[in-house]
Image (cartoon, rainbow, N blue to C red):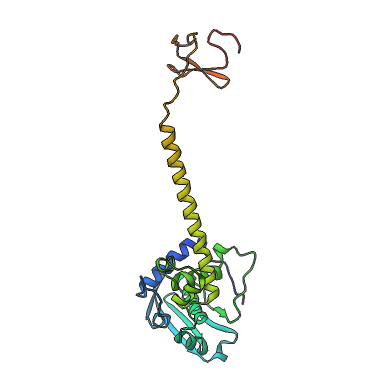
Length: 252
C-alpha cells in the first residue's frame, strides 16, 4: 500500500477554506485552541461530498502496526481508527498527536479513499506527485489551517508562540509561520506597488497632455489638415487614415 496518492487538484488557499468550513461545522468557527477530542465525539462530519456519519475507533497499538491512525470511507460513513497511545496523547494536549487527529480529519473531509494510514514516522511522498494533487500535502495544509486561527496567529511573533497558543507541534508551527510571513510580505509588496502607482498617477495628472502638432499638408483622403506623425507613419485625426508617406506623396 503506498502512502501518498493522487487526488483532485486543490491550491493551498482552497484547502485552507475547506478546513475553516470543517471546523465551523464542528463548532469551532472562531476560537483559539480547538478541542480535537471533542471533534472526534461528533456523530457527523462535513465533507466536500456532503455530510457523512463519523465513527471513531480507539484500538490497541499493536492492531494498527506502524500506523498512528487509519481513515476509511464508504458512501455514507467515515471511520477513523487511532492507536490508543496517540488518542491518549491527544487527550493530554500533546502537539504531534493533535496534529495527527487534524491530519486524519483532513483525509476524511477531502479524500474519498479507503485505507489511508498515518504512519508514526511520517508518510512517504513522491516527486511525481505535485503538491496541489498530493493527498499528504493537502492533509498537512488542512491540519495547520484547522488547528490554527489565522486572525489570532497574525498577532503572534514566532513559531514558538503559535505552537503554544494552538497546541500544535513546533514543526507544524514553523511551517505555518513561514507561510504567514510569506503572505504578509506579498501583501506588503502589493500595497507598496498600489501606492507607487497612485503616486505616479497623481504626478502625471499635474502635467497637461501635450497638444498634437499637425503637418502643413492636408490629408490625401479627407483633405483636412489634421495629419500628425506617429513613429515612422502618419495619421489623420479626422478620418484615422494611416500612411507610410508624407501627405504630399513624397517619401520620408
